[in-house]
Image (cartoon, rainbow, N blue to C red; front, side):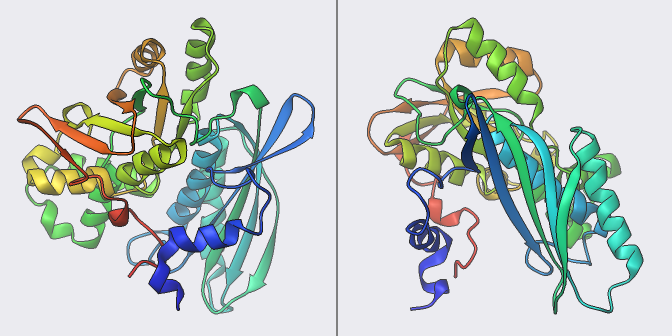
Length: 335
């Protein structure tokens, strides 16, 4: 049996057997080197022609996106970043300016969050790859996990979904954007090339939870797609959900550019929007949405059972699992 026969999720289950129980399964690992402070560690690898292409992505943007992915995982755990290390593999014929631009992109993203590069490694390789490990810290009582969503919790998204996929499609096929303005095209493309990890959400989140005397919140980031995110939270928490798709926010320009089916494909399965999906008590959820304001929304509720049911005002009947399909979310090694 080959890796392509089982896909990413089952391969991860095999690897998890070699890790301590409860150390893996979230967006990042948690270590406890000193009392009252947990160290958060996450690693992402970007490989040429898998995660980026020289045809669509400059080295500056490769660096920015690599850092953003890691910082998004830090945010998804409720932590604040401390620093990153960078492992870089390069063929010998890569221009020095490419490497300089790569580090400029990483630094530009890091500076926005006051986070330094603190080390790394360099190796000759037949293909360009970038392996970033990010470190963060969080109070143990404030760790956000995927497996603690509770029945009755409201489900929040912190912003729009589908924008990154829209930007990628425009980069791959510029002619398909002829019906929308240049400015709208650039907004979508920028969403793909320079995503912003939602570290800004964490301070607001704990202000709200403290005001409600609450500690429980479940969540993760939506880097692999909104559908996959909802599925993983529900699966790991042993719950189901009802999703009100009319409440999900996406770029308004989609209405003049895409069919309804294509809109929902981008929204649910596009990936790399790097928003947070959070589950908490309804009153706290309403307060958080008010604080975040633009494009944040309550999109559903956690329910008993395991079904994820979609509701649409235009089609009020409930229909299970027709749109939320884990198999369509992004997975490495999937056929």
